[in-house]
Picture 1 (cartoon, rainbow, N blue to C red):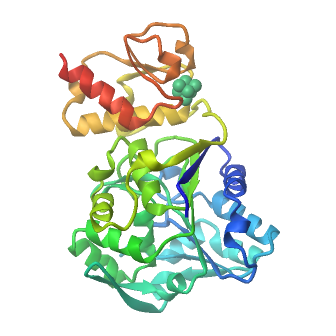
Picture 2 (picture 1 turned 45 degrees about the vertical axis):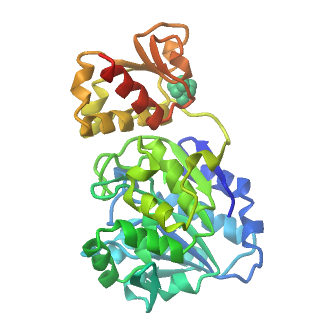
Picture 3 (picture 1 turned 90 degrees about the horizontal axis):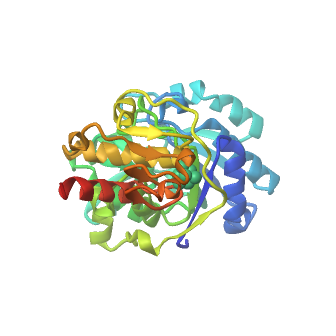
Amino acid sequence: MDNRIFLIYGKDPGSMTKALLEAEKAADLIGDRGKRIVLKPNFVIAGDPSDGATTHTEITVAVLEYLKDNGFSDIAIAEGSWVGSRTEEAFRMLGYYRLADRFGVELIDTKKDRFRKVTSHGITMEICETALNADFIINMPVLKGHCQTLMTHSMKNLKGFLSDRSKRDFHRLGLMKPIAAIADIIHPDLIISDSICGDLDFEEGGTPVETNRMMAATDSILFDAYSAGLMGFQPDDIGYIKEAREMGIGDTDPSHAEVIELNKPVVSSAKPHGTAQRLAAYTAPDDACSACFASLIHALKRLDDEGLLRRLGSRKIAIGQGYKGKKPEIGVGVCCSGAEHSVKGCPASADDILAMLRGLIEQE
Ligand code: SF4
């Protein structure tokens, strides 16, 4: 576990995943070829990844190809959908039965696994033996919004290792402390994050925001603390990150992360819809990169949640490479550094954009 976070931009999750695995030197990280490796995607429901809820299948394929090419063979893919959904439906819809055959790996619906009771910080939970017995866990969450916890990513994705009974208990206990507690018990060895088009505010998807970014890290808690900023939150805004800090189980200061970009962002091609489309009415993109534009949409969502969005009036926020050398009133990213009110960064981060917009509104 170290403090590095690798970022890569693009539209091909397969090649991006391979580049992240190479950057992390994943084969060296795993070591012994006889180790039992468990892959944990996010199949909260049976949903198409383009809806912003589930891990892109190309990522799993790339991880499996990488592991096989490097001589690893004891591999399982394990997941349990949320209470009320059948994991097999997601496995079928996303082609996992074929994948398991093709690569000769186990496919485990954790709802049907054996469980052991484990306790951390006073929270007792039933965790599947597949996770507890793994030598190396590769967590593959989707970075997306969540209607109760605001954000779901690496730490919360571990809920898929619980029995349905414990998932219900987690909700009864308010989610935050239990999520921190499971992160104290299960430490994924590597996290390959799908931030291609995670949902704006619902874990079950429906309002995907094209970001065209993937990330990799080994410290789950620091990674979540950093990722909160990508969605316009401070780490303590996310209850389970705050609990993790108070429990003393990990570093939640994003300034301690060493962020390494493997390439530069790509220009967006998607048209936002739903809530994202309404928020996009406050923007004036011109050749905007998807990661930058996604940051702006997340910042506008936070502003809307705070009841401040309307105070922007009819002003539109400039963003994109088409603004180089121009002087818009409000602009985002280095391309708009000539703006009267601007935020640096390439891409700009949602928390910086939010701070700039809040300041602008509050000084009026
Ligand atoms: S600052 Fe400009 S080049 Fe950089 S990510 Fe944003 S739009 Fe793209």
